[in-house]
Amino acid sequence: MPHLHTRPGDHDATVSFFVVRTDGPEPRLSYHLHRRARKLMMFGGHVEHDETPWAAVRRELVEESGYQPEQVRLLQPPVRMRRLTDAAAHPVPVLSSTACTSPDPAHFHTDLLYALVTAEEPAGAPGDGESTDIRLLTSDQLDAVADDQIVEMWREAGRFILDEILPAWESVELGEYESVAPAG
Image (cartoon, rainbow, N blue to C red; front, side):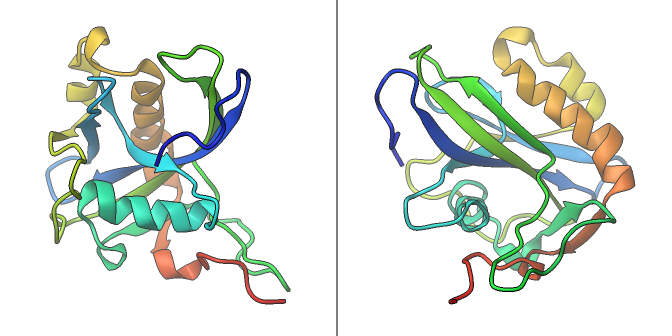
């Protein structure tokens, strides 16, 4: 989806996520070579006008990674809000950040980053027009990626997920959270 807000200083709401694969001797993070930036980044995209951020994660999961929601679990802190009266409780992101987007230094993305975990290959393939250069990186491999081949903030986020989030947070079904607000 293109930018919704195009004036200088505007912010677009985005969501992103890493898929942590646990089926090897050590955890591996999924990165893909972003088609325009030509750097390794996490999966994600813009929140559309008619969806919540959590609905955008579920949509982007299928479009960009080929995973189906039932193939992955969501990492969440042990203490969190699970249900609300008359509102949808959304999952806790690993990181909430705002950054300038390239090539326009006056345009911002305000992003919610999540961590998903699985021990299997994706059931499908990325959608048409999506990057198919997907790499699974261990912590050591992540550290060895050349600086000009990765967005540094996403290397830092990946390290945080592997070092802090994966050992401390629990994995829950994606369906624990509603993708739309309940009717009220």
